[in-house]
Image 1 (cartoon, rainbow, N blue to C red):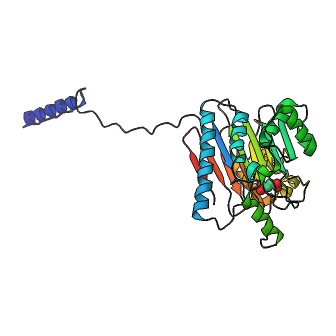
Image 2: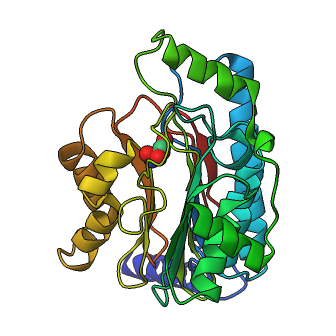
Length: 333
Ligand code: ASP
């Protein structure tokens, strides 16, 4: 009996060893989740926080397509290693050339029925910046802003001085009638007739973190519908509508410019990140929700690690974001 038990134990031992020997059925491997590749680049764009509440389906589609095409342009340039400043300029130029957005071609009208365009650009690596305001014949104000940044010892040109600098720099000019679009004209008429309480607005902007790790930001606008001629908003004011520093973040704003100037919105967000150690989304949300008033506008922002924030306190903001890690999205509401 004892012999039989020993034999059984031996048999079990042998079977156990056999099962452990290589060549037996391999243990099924648990598939490891693919590691997220390190971030190489990131981009966010906006097309203004002034979307009307009653956009038709076809209008929504047109805006989404335009945002997607613009974002795809930025993505392509960033993938091939373009610098942040190059991408910001190219992306904003594309938006300036479309009627849909309140910048360049689609700019709104002043109280005199004219179009006065503003833009600014900033390089986060060097803090070089350039801005123009009140231009009436410059097809792409963002390009002139860049020329101010790179080809002058100043940072900000206005009106006639800006136009003259445009001639010197040989940037593309157009007859002021180029900025006439029926839609913006009708919007101005409605404001004049007081049919519409809130002024029509818009603006375009772009913030980028390029492959070299540098930040850049830019903003371009026609301003607010029926603005008094000569009025300057936040978009060309560095620190208010635009800011970029590799030490903190890049920001482009859209909304009621007077409020953005009063509160140095773009710089306030970056200062909270740099000196207060606030995460970007906390900083951006705090400024939008507690510094500005409901309905004032919104911002897009990003940090050198590629974190993106898109905050607004209006019913909608045309916006989009993409990263080298596969994010690609556009939204309105
Ligand atoms: N911020 C622009 C301005 O006040 C307008 C806008 O963003 O809609 O000129």
